[in-house]
Image 1 (cartoon, rainbow, N blue to C red):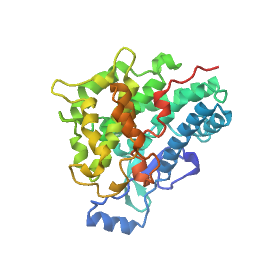
Image 2: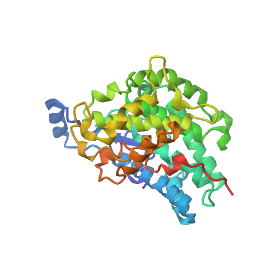
Image 3: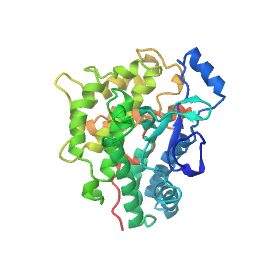
Image 4: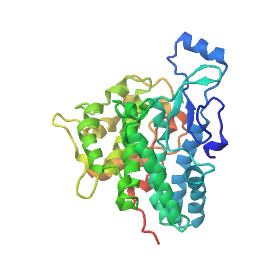
Amino acid sequence: MPLTALVCPRSPGTAHDYYSEAEPTSTATAADATAKASTATQPFTAHRDALFALGLQVPALAAAHLLTGDASFAEHAMLHLRAWFIDPATRMTPRLDYGQSAIHTPGAATGGSFSGIIETLPLVEVAQAIPFLAASNAMSEADLKALHAWFAEYLRWLAEPQDSGPRLAALARDRRDHHGTSWMLQVSAYSLLTAPENGAPKAEAKSMDDLRHRFRTVTLRAQITAEGKFPRELSSEVPYRNSLFNLDMLAAICNLLSTRFESVWDYELEDGPGVRGAIAYHFPYIARRNSWPFRADIAHFSELPGRRASLLLAARAYQRPEYAALWKMLSPDGPFAPEVLRTIPIQQPLLWVRQPPRAG
């Protein structure tokens, strides 16, 4: 269901603009709780939930088409992609000015927050699915061009300074936790999709070399200790969940940015921080949740770890069969609460370990 079918009267944008409202946290103050009760307003999350559903459906349909060759799967996926990104009547505006807005008084909302940008993370696997669907008869050249144009425009909003208003994307980029990793993963995925070798105009491409440089010089230093821990995640209310979330995203970044000639998996700083160390550090705690040496998450700890794609991708990158063996043992199906499922960023690993077939 596209955004235009889910209208919130409090949104300052149009029916095409993504809009969501921040939900209260368990650490909300009494004053916050009183203010929320006085407004009698439930946070609007319908756009977030619809986009997350899109991020489940399109990759699943692309994987089903890849496995079976059944054209109906690709045709169904294209119905979603055209509604969300192509059809002028229903397409989403490729910006995120109003994600995670805060409600202060009845009927009034502020502008968005940097934390809203993580809500478009499901589009990463949608972008991963598009080259697979492009090889089918269901996607025309015009469809592919329009999809490239949408993701290129959203990439510009994420990666380039904004002329006015709060620089939400820059604030997310500079976070030293999973919000910063989400920004890096999204920019990497959309840059790869719209790179010249994938058929997009050269002017629309973000330099992959620049992203590799930022990952090596900024992301690793900001995110990982020499031991392989994620210190900013450990101070959150859900340290185990956020650590595994961050690990999966870092592994996905390595997978996207690596080439036949350069492995981002092998990047390490002189004093040790690197994804190799982070995977090795977390491996025993993924295998045995109850051995986690820090405080347990305040919610849904028993549902974790879930099947972590970081293990599968790292097994291939580092030739570590024990990582793949553990990945196979972990449950892919949950049941997971929605807030847990939203921290499992790779739902269709087939699309990450296979190359798209050639069109035609």
